[in-house]
Length: 99
Image (cartoon, rainbow, N blue to C red; front, side, top):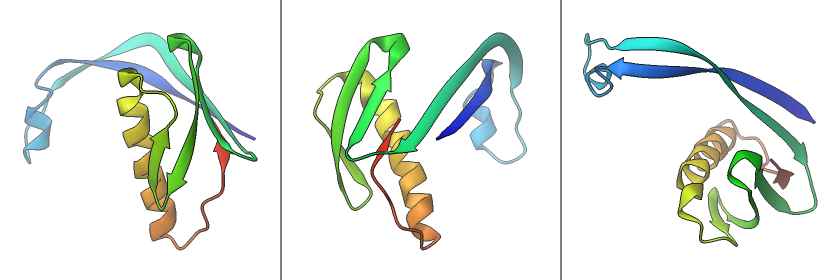
């Protein structure tokens, strides 16, 4: 199992300006963290405790299809597919996981 955490932040002003080269934004730290644990599993499952969501998924290449239609899974789906794309680009084998 791999466990990670990352600190929270709030972009107070200029969120979109950072997409243009040379621009900046005002960022504030907050007293919150995000935590994640991932491990190899027999099938793909995602559990988002804070949102009371548990779902399984099917993987086709690097695209996920969740069993749940909950719209709040959109960011999670994109983040996982981005990570899977990176893993695949490094020539590594993608395994089933529980996150």
